[in-house]
Length: 270
Image 1 (tube, rainbow, N blue to C red):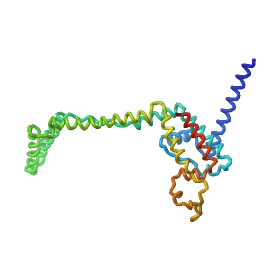
Image 2 (cartoon, one colour):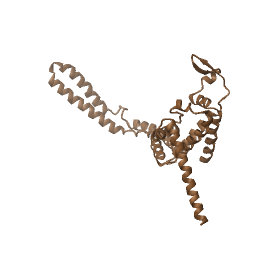
Image 3 (tube, rainbow, N blue to C red):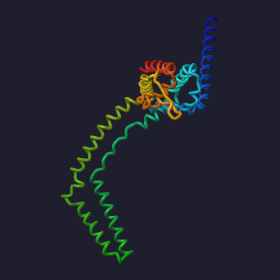
Image 4 (cartoon, rainbow, N blue to C red):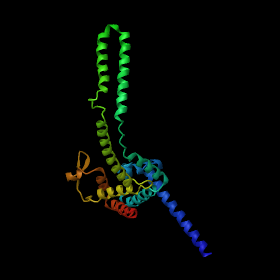
């Protein structure tokens, strides 16, 4: 009896916890004026960037400082959960294929290129003969062009012509083999950076980037108003990127909450 009671309590607690979590997520998305589809797209776009685009930033500013840490935890848990869904992994695999290096094109044998060139010249000569029939008054000009093309045709079989020689074949293949060596190296790097069905490396890259940017924020930095806009007194801070400034405006407690979560998540991925 006690065993069954315990199972019921565990189930009830799990259901309640999930229900509360879902409610918090929906409340957050409503506050940010985002649909779940839009949120999922933004999460993947940021993590694969890696970037830190924050939609509805103006809405986030309305959240009281004291409420921000709990909102950050809700958002962070939501992001973390999304990275393990089949939909996210599917998008990752599609993105992975897009990042795959392109293989170099194998050079065409010189003998084939030579015959293609021969065919082009022969077609041009045939077309010139037609033009002579259609415009006899231009015959002299066309005959001159035809003579030049006939010479090109004769040069194709000249043993001294190196354009389509076996040496050129070797030169082209040597270049191709060098390109293949580089390609194989890049594929190996790609496989290491983007393992199939496993976006962890991509997520780690994003988390490390966030921790690096948010680690050096001076929350005591002074600001002043210039033409109705707040700017940093320290010009070095004014030149900081969007994410650094966003962290500053969010406040130390909020950012430290996010950093603690990111560090814990990162340790789980190692």
